Image 1 (spheres, helix red, strand yellow):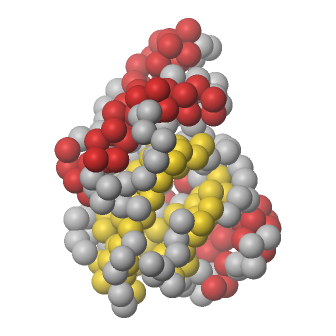
Image 2 (tube, rainbow, N blue to C red):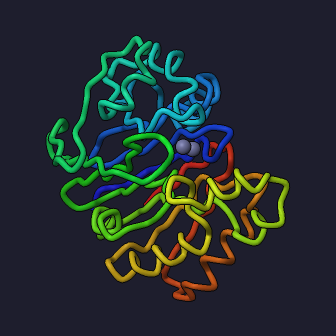
Length: 254
Ligand SMILES: [Zn+2]
Ligand SMILES: [Zn+2]
């Protein structure tokens, strides 16, 4: 079995950027972490931006694209996004390419990338799957509601990076004004720990055993609460859970 490598460089409202390796390719997902931090996280594991084969953008919120210009200045690859998201990265120096939702994208021999729609308050927010002959990675954050269509796309991944944004009680009793709380809880908001746990319960039955909990709120969640909420729902010891830090340079190998 070929190796999957993931570096969660940044996750959450302060900035999002993941480095993944699958089927011999190297990719970034989102560019919401500053260039130097991304460079340093990669250097630590003998990787570099110049060797990245593609950058995939989920949506145009600031925490996902704020470093698009400096990062894209240091790559040789293309930046991929759907048409609606492209406007947010229009100043990227790297060549940009529009992708369509729900199409098997065969840009890289031996690997299929798929983009799928995720409900959120940025039009045409998307998640991705990357499938090599024998391995699959799925990525979904900034997801107001999980639905059957998304679960179908995620199913069968070896590793799934999935949003576990907030604890519903912490959000309710926290400092956020009612209107913002309602937005976060809405279909256009973010996935709660409970909703994440529910999705994982389904996905583990479809063969996934590694889950990276991502995009945790700093105000309305803690790594411990997110982990415990999912662990309580999924007692199966064979299921491996990892909570992505807001910023980090850990290399995860699967
Ligand atoms: Zn976000
Ligand atoms: Zn967002």
